[in-house]
Length: 367
Ligand SMILES: Nc1ncnc2c1ncn2[C@@H]1O[C@H](COP(=O)(O)OP(=O)(O)O)[C@@H](O)[C@H]1O
Ligand SMILES: [Mg+2]
Image (tube, rainbow, N blue to C red; front, side, top):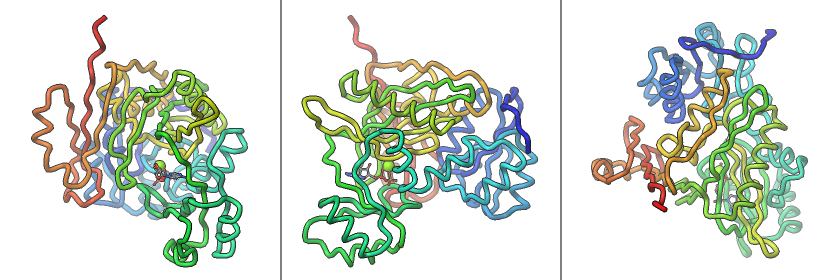
C-alpha cells in the first residue's frame, strides 16, 4: 500500500503488538496525548489489555485477526523485536508499521545485527558465525577463551547463551545450546554496561536520553542509573553511535543500544553489545526522571509529531526492577520518600519475571 508520512491527530488509534509491560506503558503514554491504543496479544492475561479499551487476543499467525486489527488502527508498532516476519507483512500491507519491518530483520538475528554494526565502523566484541561443533572449535581457536556463545535468534534476559571457559566440554556446550545457528563472541572484560535510548523521527530528528548505566543480576537488568558515571566525551561517543545506528536504519521510533565500557589505552572506550528496536527496560527511569519519557518519545515519533527535548529532573535517577518475589515488598516501597512505584498488574511472581519497578530521583544539588 502506498503510504505517505504518518501524521496522527488526537483521537486516532495506535495498534501495539505485544501486551506486556512495555505495551502497557506505551498505551498509558499515548493516552496522555489523547491517542487511543489497541493491543494485539495472544495472551489473555496481557498486562497491556488492562489499560486500553480495545484489545485483540489472537495468535500472531491469525491473518484474519491481524487484518481486522489493522482496519481498526491508524499505525502499528510493537513492544518486542521477535514479531514474526509474516505478521509484520500482513500488517504492513494495510497500515504503516513503525519501526519499519526491515529493521526487524536486522535486529532479530545477532549475526546480522553484528555485521550491520561492524559495517558502520562501530566496534563490537570479536565474533564468529557458528553453525556446528566444528565451526565452534574453529571460532574458539580464532577468538580465544573465555567467550560467550549465543543463539542467533530469540535470546533475551541471558536466555540462549552460555559462557565458554578454558577446560569446558565444548561439544556438550554446543549440544546444550540446542541450535544450529549461533554466534561466538569474545568475552568482554567490561568496566560497566551502559545503554543509550534514542528516538528518531521520520524527518530525521534524533533525541537521546542521558546515557544510562546498567547492572544485571542473573542476566536480568536489576538497576539503572542516569546519568552513567562516565566521562562526558565517552557519553557523547555513545550517543553518536546510537544516532548513527538509528540513521543508518532510517529508524522511526525509540531504540536502545546496549554498550560495554572497556578500559582503553589511557581512556575507556565503548563496544556495542546489542540493539533493541523498541522501548527498553533501561529507559524506565525516564517516566519519572525526565520531562518526557521514552514511551512518549516513541508515541510522538510514530505519530509523526515533533520529538521532545528530554530534560532530566534530578541530579541522579535510579530505577530498580522488581523481579519475581521482589514484588512482595511493594508496600514497603510505597513508603520510601521520593520513590515512585510502578506495578505491571501481572499475575504470579515467577522467578525472573519482571513485575514492576521503582524510580528514585535525587534532587538537584543546591549551589
Ligand atoms: N561478549 C560478552 N562479554 C561479556 N559479557 C557479555 C557478553 N555478551 C553478553 N554479556 C553479558 O550478558 C548480558 C546479556 O547479553 P545480551 O547479549 O545483552 O543478551 P540479552 O538479549 O539476553 O540481553 C549482557 O548484558 C552482559 O552482561
Ligand atoms: Mg541485552
